[in-house]
Image (cartoon, rainbow, N blue to C red; front, side, top):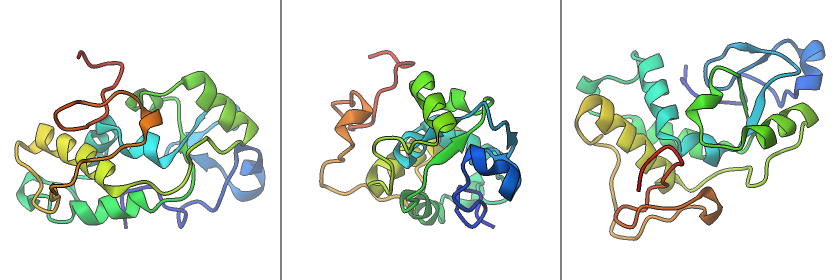
Length: 174
Protein backbone atom coordinates (compact mmCIF):
# COMPACT_ATOMS: atom_id res chain seq x y z
CA UNK A 1 0.00 0.00 0.00
CA UNK A 2 1.24 3.46 -0.85
CA UNK A 3 2.00 5.52 2.25
CA UNK A 4 0.57 8.66 0.69
CA UNK A 5 -2.60 10.55 -0.11
CA UNK A 6 -4.70 8.75 -2.71
CA UNK A 7 -8.31 8.97 -3.68
CA UNK A 8 -8.52 5.19 -3.54
CA UNK A 9 -8.43 5.72 0.22
CA UNK A 10 -11.11 8.42 0.26
CA UNK A 11 -13.55 9.24 -2.49
CA UNK A 12 -13.96 13.04 -2.80
CA UNK A 13 -15.10 13.33 0.77
CA UNK A 14 -16.09 16.72 2.09
CA UNK A 15 -16.56 17.35 5.82
CA UNK A 16 -20.32 17.75 5.33
CA UNK A 17 -20.48 14.35 3.62
CA UNK A 18 -18.77 12.58 6.53
CA UNK A 19 -21.99 11.24 8.03
CA UNK A 20 -23.06 9.71 4.71
CA UNK A 21 -19.77 8.10 3.67
CA UNK A 22 -17.97 7.46 6.95
CA UNK A 23 -15.52 9.53 8.95
CA UNK A 24 -13.27 12.11 7.34
CA UNK A 25 -9.62 11.21 7.86
CA UNK A 26 -6.45 13.26 7.62
CA UNK A 27 -4.55 12.67 4.37
CA UNK A 28 -1.23 12.86 6.22
CA UNK A 29 -1.64 10.77 9.39
CA UNK A 30 -4.97 9.00 8.65
CA UNK A 31 -6.40 10.23 11.96
CA UNK A 32 -10.15 10.75 12.16
CA UNK A 33 -11.10 14.41 11.80
CA UNK A 34 -13.96 16.48 13.10
CA UNK A 35 -16.38 17.82 10.51
CA UNK A 36 -16.00 21.25 12.17
CA UNK A 37 -12.21 21.45 12.52
CA UNK A 38 -9.68 20.80 9.80
CA UNK A 39 -7.74 22.36 6.96
CA UNK A 40 -7.87 22.00 3.19
CA UNK A 41 -4.56 22.31 1.32
CA UNK A 42 -3.33 21.90 -2.24
CA UNK A 43 -0.88 19.27 -3.39
CA UNK A 44 1.70 22.05 -3.82
CA UNK A 45 1.25 23.24 -0.23
CA UNK A 46 1.67 19.72 1.12
CA UNK A 47 4.31 18.17 -1.10
CA UNK A 48 6.74 21.11 -1.18
CA UNK A 49 6.96 20.93 2.62
CA UNK A 50 10.17 19.27 3.78
CA UNK A 51 8.49 18.71 7.15
CA UNK A 52 5.76 16.68 5.43
CA UNK A 53 8.37 14.46 3.77
CA UNK A 54 10.33 13.99 7.01
CA UNK A 55 7.10 13.01 8.77
CA UNK A 56 6.24 10.56 5.97
CA UNK A 57 9.69 8.98 5.98
CA UNK A 58 9.55 8.47 9.74
CA UNK A 59 5.93 7.30 9.72
CA UNK A 60 6.53 4.66 7.04
CA UNK A 61 9.88 3.00 7.79
CA UNK A 62 8.79 -0.07 5.83
CA UNK A 63 9.02 2.06 2.67
CA UNK A 64 11.83 4.45 3.54
CA UNK A 65 15.17 3.45 5.04
CA UNK A 66 18.72 4.70 4.66
CA UNK A 67 19.66 1.28 3.30
CA UNK A 68 17.22 1.67 0.39
CA UNK A 69 19.28 4.64 -0.85
CA UNK A 70 16.05 6.29 -2.00
CA UNK A 71 15.62 3.97 -4.96
CA UNK A 72 11.82 4.28 -5.03
CA UNK A 73 11.56 7.89 -3.90
CA UNK A 74 11.05 9.27 -7.43
CA UNK A 75 8.14 6.86 -7.87
CA UNK A 76 6.49 8.15 -4.68
CA UNK A 77 7.13 11.74 -5.74
CA UNK A 78 5.42 11.10 -9.08
CA UNK A 79 2.40 9.60 -7.32
CA UNK A 80 2.07 12.66 -5.10
CA UNK A 81 2.67 15.19 -7.91
CA UNK A 82 -0.12 13.67 -9.99
CA UNK A 83 -2.67 14.07 -7.19
CA UNK A 84 -5.38 16.38 -8.46
CA UNK A 85 -7.43 16.42 -5.26
CA UNK A 86 -7.30 18.62 -2.18
CA UNK A 87 -5.66 17.37 1.01
CA UNK A 88 -7.62 17.24 4.26
CA UNK A 89 -5.28 18.00 7.16
CA UNK A 90 -6.02 17.52 10.86
CA UNK A 91 -5.21 19.78 13.78
CA UNK A 92 -2.16 17.68 14.70
CA UNK A 93 -0.61 17.79 11.21
CA UNK A 94 -1.20 21.42 10.18
CA UNK A 95 2.03 22.46 11.92
CA UNK A 96 3.96 20.63 9.16
CA UNK A 97 2.92 23.30 6.67
CA UNK A 98 3.68 26.98 6.21
CA UNK A 99 0.15 28.09 5.31
CA UNK A 100 -2.46 30.61 6.37
CA UNK A 101 -4.40 28.46 8.84
CA UNK A 102 -7.43 30.77 8.85
CA UNK A 103 -7.86 30.53 5.08
CA UNK A 104 -7.23 26.78 4.93
CA UNK A 105 -9.65 26.19 7.84
CA UNK A 106 -12.32 28.27 6.08
CA UNK A 107 -11.81 26.27 2.87
CA UNK A 108 -12.28 23.05 4.85
CA UNK A 109 -15.47 24.16 6.60
CA UNK A 110 -16.99 25.65 3.44
CA UNK A 111 -15.78 22.81 1.21
CA UNK A 112 -14.04 25.24 -1.15
CA UNK A 113 -11.17 23.93 -3.21
CA UNK A 114 -8.08 26.07 -2.47
CA UNK A 115 -6.62 28.22 -5.25
CA UNK A 116 -3.90 26.37 -7.12
CA UNK A 117 -5.39 22.92 -6.51
CA UNK A 118 -4.46 20.09 -8.84
CA UNK A 119 -1.34 18.26 -9.99
CA UNK A 120 2.01 19.96 -9.44
CA UNK A 121 5.43 20.16 -11.10
CA UNK A 122 7.45 17.10 -10.04
CA UNK A 123 10.78 18.90 -9.80
CA UNK A 124 9.62 21.13 -6.93
CA UNK A 125 8.34 18.15 -5.00
CA UNK A 126 11.45 16.12 -5.81
CA UNK A 127 13.69 18.75 -4.26
CA UNK A 128 11.63 19.00 -1.06
CA UNK A 129 11.62 15.21 -0.72
CA UNK A 130 15.35 14.98 -1.46
CA UNK A 131 16.27 17.67 1.09
CA UNK A 132 14.20 15.90 3.75
CA UNK A 133 15.87 12.60 2.79
CA UNK A 134 19.32 14.13 3.21
CA UNK A 135 18.39 15.51 6.65
CA UNK A 136 17.33 12.07 7.85
CA UNK A 137 19.66 9.68 6.02
CA UNK A 138 22.71 11.87 5.28
CA UNK A 139 22.92 11.03 1.57
CA UNK A 140 21.20 12.11 -1.62
CA UNK A 141 18.44 9.72 -2.76
CA UNK A 142 19.69 7.89 -5.85
CA UNK A 143 16.40 8.12 -7.76
CA UNK A 144 16.22 11.94 -7.62
CA UNK A 145 18.21 13.46 -10.45
CA UNK A 146 18.90 17.18 -10.62
CA UNK A 147 18.90 18.38 -14.21
CA UNK A 148 20.69 21.31 -15.74
CA UNK A 149 17.48 23.24 -16.28
CA UNK A 150 16.58 25.69 -13.53
CA UNK A 151 14.16 24.50 -10.89
CA UNK A 152 10.82 26.25 -11.19
CA UNK A 153 8.26 26.76 -8.47
CA UNK A 154 4.87 28.32 -8.32
CA UNK A 155 5.69 32.01 -7.75
CA UNK A 156 2.73 32.35 -5.38
CA UNK A 157 4.35 29.81 -3.01
CA UNK A 158 6.76 32.36 -1.55
CA UNK A 159 10.40 33.47 -1.70
CA UNK A 160 13.01 31.11 -3.15
CA UNK A 161 16.66 30.41 -2.40
CA UNK A 162 18.86 32.11 -5.01
CA UNK A 163 21.23 29.14 -5.01
CA UNK A 164 18.92 26.11 -5.30
CA UNK A 165 15.46 27.69 -5.89
CA UNK A 166 13.96 25.87 -2.89
CA UNK A 167 11.02 27.67 -1.29
CA UNK A 168 12.07 29.52 1.88
CA UNK A 169 9.49 29.20 4.64
CA UNK A 170 8.63 31.82 7.25
CA UNK A 171 10.29 29.58 9.85
CA UNK A 172 13.72 29.79 8.19
CA UNK A 173 16.22 32.59 8.38
CA UNK A 174 17.54 34.16 5.19
